[in-house]
Length: 386
Ligand code: GLN
Image (tube, protein in one colour):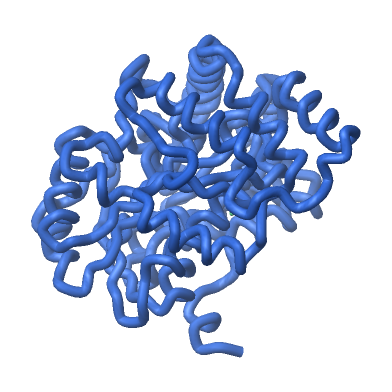
């Protein structure tokens, strides 16, 4: 096996998923909705299959889906114009988009700036492309980072910054000042900002609370925005995502994407056209439902005694279990939660690099994209910890 493959481990989220299934635990580990997606989206995908739309679509996305992405983006963020012919590439989920971006952008020896704790994929993506991750630590309880540390992470070899915004796992939504600083450094070191914006519509800051970095002055020409249908429309199994990037970067991403997967599934892209055509009220309702879920779970976790900061965005809450088990660690605690309490969460250790793992040792992550019945059943079980 390759030396590269030896530099990272299997996703801890996978391991937790298997253990949870084995013990019949309520799954608040891997972050996926347990409620249905809107009917019209399902109808559109089914209709496409029945209409024999079952062959390879255009490698970088059907014209209809690319047009729908451009139209919906302009509707959500007036002033953001995307040319669907040259600035979009449809991929198999945000996961493939990130790999395609890493291969399209990075050469061996290049450096990539990552914020830690991170979403697990960025480090392997950088390593597989031969690049070297440099990390900047976000610190509990409010997940701020040190400006000097960020400045020091950049240098002549910096090629890209990967930013999950709103953030998985911390729930942080980066402020305008923080984005301006990242932008200044990207310009100074000629680096590309890769924004994983999959939780774009899941935040608790009200209308206008989320600003896409691609619109920050100076970043328009050096930002790659990654997104997908998965979280916004509750279709994580469909595997339809995309990148928005300037034409030169998009051309490289499209070439890599073609050799990775050829294309995202044709009928699911047809479903995506229906999803992106949903009226604006859908997004307001989505945020309102998520706020209820966040508060239901966080109130219960606070009451049980976990230390946490309610997320401003995403559908995760990162908790410190130390008040409940001062001697224990998150890995053993998460295992006990699955096997004895019947609820799964993800131990957060793999969201920190091994040398910084002390910061994440007692941290666990709960996901709350679930029906109220599911969350209430989980809370009932968790109360036994009190
Ligand atoms: N984004 C989801 C999570 O963080 C699922 C990702 C995964 O399965 N690796 O739980």
